[in-house]
Length: 353
Image (tube, rainbow, N blue to C red; front, top):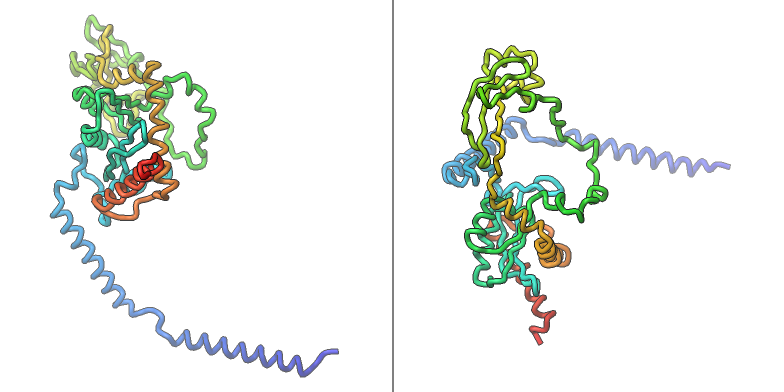
């Protein structure tokens, strides 16, 4: 049987709870939640004017700092202008590059510095110059492909410093890595944003070139005019031709001839002189040195020399990211962690006994 008294009590509780909820809603409705819109707009105008004044002041005081390595305008960060944009496996981040030179025998860090540059190439020669007092006649500098550049190889060769710095195509030339594609993670087809390269375009072999008469006829039957007989590219001479605007602009084969027909008015084509040997530059010399059996054996030691040091700093010491701003502070933090690594190495080798 049902209890009327119990039901009455429950009904009273429901009514009391409903009145409390309504009272709370009435109080919220009468309360001023947002400030006046004009006041908010005035505050926003003041904030925008302040930010604009800070930007104008920085631009006036840092005219030269805005130029990059090649003279182009360098993108800056207002919070930490000494940092740089860097491409990583997790996307582009704003940060610093921690560089360290490691002794192969004991894994002691002999030099360390944090660079606010998106390219590691600029950090190679300053590091080599910093460790010059520790270098011997038998010293061999090894670095990964990120430090490879013709300028760096030239500087090392002119200084008489032995080095092995591979290019990006080293593993493709090494038969030991011929099956590496099988283990490489395939790109996500839903995230792959690479644009397909246009195919089926006319190549120089599709043009009729007569070296005797120095003439060139395009696939449409139009004659191209000479744009230079003794042009040089990478030490090789070639004869360059270019189409006339009155012939190329109305040509129905523009899409087959030009990569960007909507922007490029005329086609250019070059024919290299036969029986020319490419000059043996520093990159080619490095390829020959690192592709030799001795070069491959000596460069393979780099992995066991420097990578454990970075693994100790990042995994064991938990230096997954710099926590400071400004090149000076970040460099101090990087050197501090490297110093702790060296102290541990000395302690483990019995130096403290």
